[in-house]
Amino acid sequence: MPPTRVRAIILKRINFRETSVIVNLLTDSIGKIHGIMKGVRNPEKKIPPLAYQQGSCIEAFVYLKPRSGLELVTKPEVIEIFNFKGEASVLWRRLLFQLDRFIPAARFNSKEIYDLLVQTGFVISKTKDYRVVELIITQRILLHLGFGPFLEKCLVCGAKENLYFFSGKLGGAVCAKCHQTEITSFRLPSRHIQALRFFSKIPIAQIQMVKYISEGLYKNLKKCLDEIIEYHLMA
Ligand SMILES: [Zn+2]
Image (cartoon, rainbow, N blue to C red; front, side):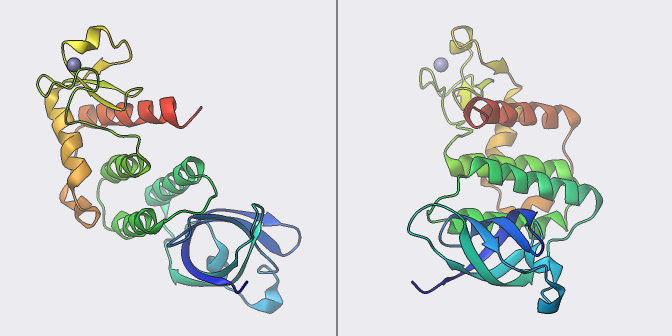
């Protein structure tokens, strides 16, 4: 079979033997690839290290295997350099790590999640408050994967009023009446639920419009997202 040309972000990379690397790639079309780039660290080949570094956005060829296993990835070329420093680098690596952990190596239509990650790379360099990017992107990833947060109605009874409790186990809002029977739910100010709704709709390219969030809001929303992750993705 001829190789497939892809664009991809390198979620994870480890050195393998003398000159090769093993990579997990989130591609723009065929899902997540667990692959090997042979000989790329051989200095004679003159391949720039950014072409196989974690976080780089590359173009490459993948020789897809009929069965699971390491796929051969060749001719990596950098198309975007997301090579951050300091706090931005910590955030970028954490998001890559999360995605690598949440998404199994499998074929699926990955265009949307790939675009989200590329946009995130651009937005990180413009942002002032990294906590905002962390919250909004983590929320968007969870929504994309189908884990919520679902905020339009109570996930126990369907009511649309008094939604100021949240359950990570259920993946969203719980009303004041149902919270007593749903022991995993905890209270949130309703304006924090509103903020979470707002964050789920804001275009990624406009994240920097949100200049600042309070420590209280950050803590609460982070707790909501962390509990979804803990209940649904850490098992
Ligand atoms: Zn309810």
